[in-house]
Length: 525
Image 1 (tube, helix red, strand yellow):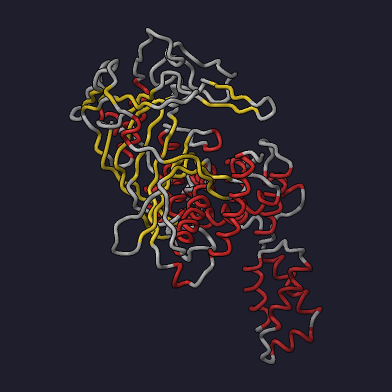
Image 2 (image 1 turned 135 degrees about the vertical axis):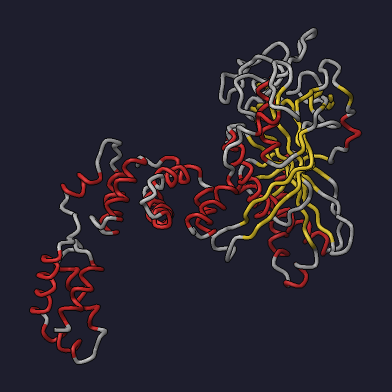
């Protein structure tokens, strides 16, 4: 007999082929259905210990080595709430304009998986830590959108909860093992209202949230490590009609995966509805290899979890009014004062202060390593921020891509970049030399190397002396009498040819703006 797994693989490939056939029907039929997307995001808090125990909260530890008695649900052990987790959760809520509740409570959410030893998860379903927030972000994909557009999504609630363990499946031995290192890890769950329309908007929201929690140092944002996991709820309906039946896509592990999974699911549901089918309420997973969503199980409802108050934890109280912190009560106003500049504020600041184009501002801020370099170089206000931004976005990224490096792997230090930028802006070198030295610093990294010394050693300094430029221009005029005569007879297009000869004769080591003006001046005589 064929195994269920093999049959499911066949069905998945068949569904994918069928969807590709139906995906590009007439535009009229494709726009008949309106898509609605809502997200639920789990972010792992960046603390040394877990939410209710003193076990280490780290990624990549030895299997079952970061597990306390409480994490393993040994009878008689009790939870003790980690203060640092509450502080980070409150800061995140404040950054998202949420209302922090003076009193919140903990609940038990029951479900029975092998990696959940107690048979329930401690969470905050009924009285969460915070509610009624909003996240604002820019949606912009170069090559897809002509210009950025603003979008926002309401936040229903933010709640503290513990993570479950991890099941490890061994296909060869045909058995499953459990690693409890992650059991009890501190999470915040952010529940968003269904305010989005497609995968690109969802991906932009996730990217913005990653930037925010990284600025707050609340979460590493490393999706590849599971520090931030996304569940997407997708449904379709006709305009003016109630929302349709939704499906949930679980545990999407990358920003790109969020966009792709939601786009596929929208197309799948549209094709199904156009053929007169019915969308089932179910939970699906994202297969990043086949690039399809795959059925997992029927979607649970609230009643399935049998929520009940957590008897071993008292209500969590915070101080909303005064900046008086104590051992037992956290001051929310004090935490408000510690919130740094957030990504959207950074974009607005450089657009208003430096007149940087919105597209450039988005790309700079959305790449933290690039943003750090920009801030480091523009700390000296004599450097033109717009020119610095263009150098980073165009030339630095080009060199890094050529060497197959991410921005986070850039070996060029801020000091080196400042020195090299100054050489260009003060016309000690031209743009071609800037690129050449930048490439040298990337290919042969050494934080002690001086760009100015490299320029001197290679003889790449730009000629700016007026007398030498005059001499070089006169040489070109004397050696090309026919072109000179054509220019004087009114054929001004030959001026570019004369400039080209000047560039070639000087090997590009001359200030061409200055040389151009001088050449025009001499040709008038």
